[in-house]
Amino acid sequence: MEWEENEAMPIKECDCPGPMEQKRWAITNAILVYTCPHCGGGIAAIADYIHGIERRIVEMKADLYQQLGNVLPPGKAVLTACDDCQGQGCAYCGETGQRLWKACPKCGDIGFDFINGRNETDGMVCQIACGFTWAADDPRWLAQRLPVTIQAA
Figure (cartoon, rainbow, N blue to C red):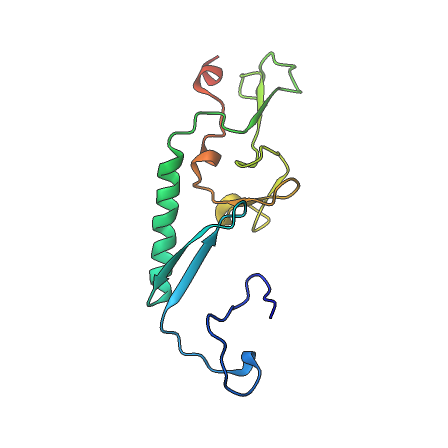
């Protein structure tokens, strides 16, 4: 039996009569499985309630961010000379002469979009290159700013 992504997948087939979507299910445990898109390896978080899974997601995210360590500016952002002043410094570029184009923290493509269509509150998604999604508090995203040496110039 083939299962679509984001669809419930049975651990053990239910032998009761009737279509699966019409069966009543008793939730005894919630299982969240993270799978590596490259090698297929993965980890599972099991909790006896949904809030336990949410708490585990926050913990896993903190562990990931700790593993990333400090990401130095500008991260994967692309720095270019300001088009308005050709690098001389103006009000548009904050007198730095540089423009910062934020990019996907994974592939560096500047073709990203806001998930909610308005701002970074719900995170971002790489629209063109890799489809990676990330949160606004991702250290690789927060590092995308002008280095202090350029800001002070």
